[in-house]
Image 1 (cartoon, rainbow, N blue to C red):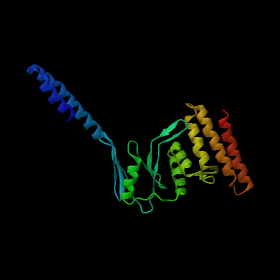
Image 2 (image 1 turned 90 degrees about the vertical axis):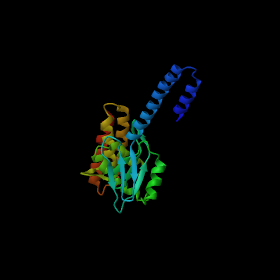
Image 3 (image 1 turned 30 degrees about the vertical axis):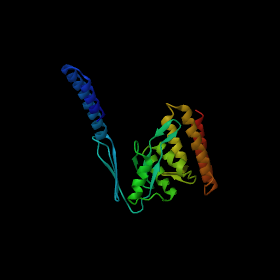
Image 4 (image 1 turned 180 degrees about the vertical axis):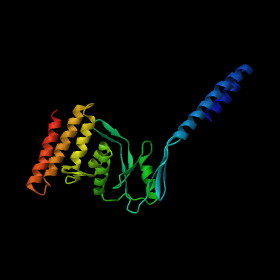
Length: 229
């Protein structure tokens, strides 16, 4: 509309027919460019659809919609943008305890929550359910995302890493985090290893027997060795 008003003003200001034609061509191109830009942005923009039985993210013109259906025990959490040791993750909507999530980059977080609550979705679940999500995301190689859950809902000092009876889940997350960034950010990796070793020593305090305590402390010493490299 702004360009059309400018076009009308410019044409009225031109004393000759050729001037009016030139103004029409220039502003016509500007109008076309504006319409094309608006169309490109809005067609490719992701859309979030919140219903009573499912939440769907539609990625625009490319890709397939991703749907998370509702189950009776569902409870949601909105995780804010997260930054730790140089790693950054965008905000996410998670299904607490299920491991499922939807990225919320570009969406107003307060409006997302309001839309979910309007459709009957709950946000009051037990934070300890996040332990299952930490384990799931660690298996998926999402140690940064798992670390955010630990920061928000943890520290889960007695949680055991799946398949590793002598290893703390929290220690496993931060050790994996350190392993991923060791070649590119050695100082940050060492900090991650320090956190892992500290979590492993706290885990040792929950050992059911002296031999198990010793095994867990051995794991802490191994991780400390990585931090000294």
